Amino acid sequence: MIYCGIDWAEKTHDVALVDDTGQLLAKRHITDDAVGYRILLDLLAEYGDTEENPIPVAIETSRGLLVTVLRTGKRQVFAINPMAAARYRDRHSVSRKKSDPGDALVLANILRTDMHAHRPLPNDSDLARAVAVLARAQQDATWNRQQAANQLRSLLREYYPAALAAFEPWKNSLCRPEAHELLKAAPTPARAARLTRTQLQAALKRAGRKRGIEAEAERLREVFRADWAQQPPLIEDALGKQMLALLVQLEAACTAADDLAEAVEETFPQHPDAEIILSFPGLGVQLGARVLAEVGDDRQRFADARGLKAYAGSSPVTRASGKKSSITRRWVKNNRLNHAGYLWAFSAITASPGAKAHYRRRRDNHGDWHAAAQRNLFNRMLGQLYHCLQKRQLFDENTAFPAELAVAA
Image: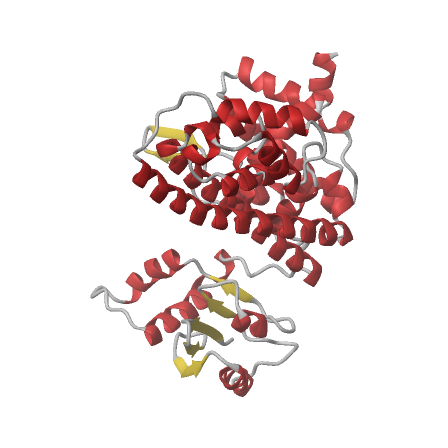
């Protein structure tokens, strides 16, 4: 049996091949291009790599063109956590020396000694991978949009409280096009106080507002002309220019999030698992796509529901030493799936009577706090999702929460 380890970098990669005894058979330094990939594949073929019996590969990343090339055929590719690889490195040297060829050798030896303890990359379909790309990008864009909105809000608090008061009644106030048009028309409080009803109505129309324009313009005019504390004129103008620069970033983030959301809505329903995922209470297209992106459609990825729950960080972990024992939540987990699970459980409480009854039972009978009760609900519903995906069944409220529904009735 031959094992391969690859220490990857931005421009070059180090490759090491070892046999069952740990003997170094070959090492290469390849470039990150088509020529380097061909050298790597030829090296693997030279040492017995075939389509029926491929050589397993260990690498410290799960993404990129190199990983895509290695995943052709039936080859198993293991994405080793860099922290785990660093711990393995100490097994071979106590001097704490480090080199890229040495790291490649360490990765190869990880497979030689402990391949059973590591999980290969899942064999997801191309459609599932495409959904994962779009869902993760949309999630990142949403986080970036919120970060930009928080920066803009913090700046407006320094010199423009009238704007925050004017936009407060609107949902997602600073992310709305009405707020953007008004801030462009009046980047400072002094200019906002001089806006006429006609100018305010024109700004609302440019933002796409169709109804209640006159009443909203009158409300905005009263807010902008109220008595507010102000910065000196020169400082106010400088802060207004800074605000316009942040506004450009926020508009770009809003556009990216909306465009990616449309792409998710177009791609996710095409997947065969979409119908099952959307049958669960609290899961819509965007949140369901995030769940599919992290769970995947490889049915052999998780041995049972417990493995999926541990991966998501919803199941507790026990720490015991001597007479001391504690049960806590998991810190090492898939953060994206865990975040989606928090939103899923929060929405399911209002969308499902059984989920709400389960949440109340955890709060009232077990003394859980809100986050702990939500995590327990997510843990239960994740197990139900695993069962439905394995059996190709839709979610059924009476089957999922029989005891809770009986008590609620």
